[in-house]
Length: 77
Image (tube, rainbow, N blue to C red; front, side, top):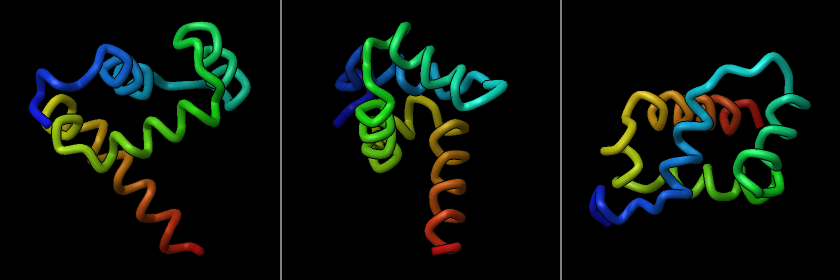
């Protein structure tokens, strides 16, 4: 998949994830209102993007940060 193959929704999810949040409730409400997704679907899409090389090329800082968070969580299990 090339950079141009990232959908607008994929780019929106990555941009959304760059923002900081005061709490989970605010983020989940914004996911519904701004992206029109359920939080469950949002996190499914986000997790898939973390394994997508096009997403890494588009936003390496965000993708690498989230990959580190994901790996740390897996390591605690």
